[in-house]
Image 1: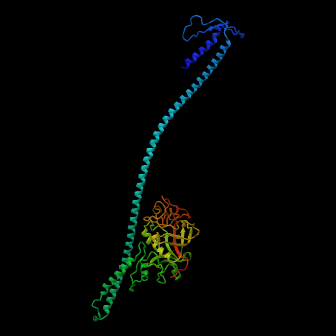
Image 2: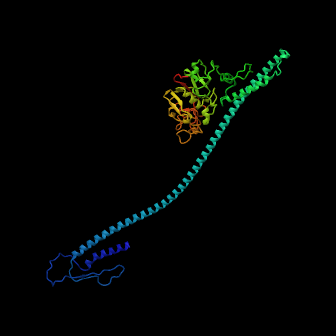
Image 3: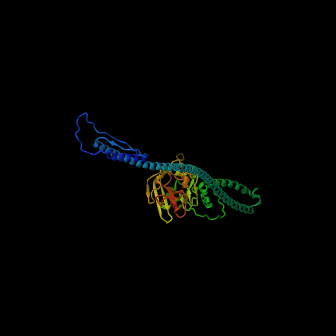
Amino acid sequence: MEKQLTLGLSLLLSLLLVLPEVCGIKEEPPKKLSHSSDQKAGSCSYTFILPQQKLKGALCVNTGPASGATNHSEVVALREELRRQQEQLEELRRQLEQDGALVTEVRALRKESGSMNTRISQLYAQLLHEVMYKKDQVAEQRRVENLLLNATTQVLQTSASYRELEKKYEGLTSMMRNHSELISQLEKQCQATRDTISPAQIPTNPCSIQSRTPMNESADSKEMANDVQRDQGTPLQQTQDREPLQGRKVLSAPMAPTDSPSISFPVTKTPGPWRDCKQALDSGETTSGIYLLRPLSANRLLQAWCEQTMAQGGWTVIQRRQDGSVNFFRTWEQYKQGFGNLDGEYWLGLEHLYWLTRQASYKLHVAMEDWQGRHVFAEYNSFRLEPENDWYRLRLGEYQGNAGDSMSWHNNKAFTTLDKDKDAYSGNCAHFQKGGWWYHMCAHSNLNGVWYRGGHYRSRYQDGVYWAEFHGGSYSLKKVIMMIKPTEISTP
């Protein structure tokens, strides 16, 4: 259509240029026309030849003069119109080309958009599947952790029960051995007496003491067996030395020799019991060892290690870590009553700590040693615990020392164990830290954690015996001792 229009306009322009010559029109200067009504202007007729037609006859007959000025202006106007229309055609052609390119691009974008929508749908489905899979994995992991926690609790309980029975059995075995030796001695004395006195003086039942003595001593043995501390591992010699302190009957007959204990315990000058190790020190007991204590206003006896040589003495040791021989991942009841070996690693017990710190104003001293032999300490000028109905909440004073303050962050926090979660964290800090402590969210110190050999350790959680201000949370200390001493003289 555009080509036909262009061709028609070109032919029209050619005719307009040729017509003046064919009609015999000459350009002459204009003449002044008269106003006579009789004068008639010449006329010229035009014949247009259409394309694809044969020309026949004359094209034009000019019978008179014609005005050339008017035809010239019309040609100029037509030329201008033709030029303008050509420009418009070019502009339309360019727009058409641009529109065609835009249409192609839009189609490509639509196709790409469809592909992207399909890909997004696939990714969304895959992500949803992975989220569901992860959720199932987390649920399964929690279930396995709960099973592991329950199994660990059962193992700990079984181990504690086994150790308790083992200690009782050892105590009873030693008691029976001593009783057998005593019975042998009495039999010999009875036989010697019977040989030296006259027959009239021989009693009708000379060996009746043999039947009475085991009965009486059996009751004593039961009482002593009930008094054996769980998981303390107290040797037999200590039990024999402590027996007169508890008001039991002492047999004057010679005892059979026993095996040497693994550690020698001091023989105290006075029987005690004492309020704390500071009172024992003031009473002249300057040797470190196991002492019998009875806190004021508490109808209970307890044993504790008294440190009488370190830091001017008088310290009651409430916790000790040194070789990893005792598992500190324990339950609430075990942390309440205490566990471990008094001459090794042990925890005195939250209930004992409560009654001890209730009778006077105490301060806390934490002595630490790393695997390079460096010794540091942290001391707090006041230390006490709230009762169990407030979850043995920690009350600490001001810090001094060279280890850094990693305990004040736990001030005013309740005690948490694996079976009683009282921390501020969404999970159970005792489960992650593998111990019992006054956790917050979770710990800057974890002295009841896992004892790792060598210092730096690798674990999924920071569960070592660490003091964050001293080597950080990924360093397990070699030795730790927590001990308390009154800051002022306690009243009896």
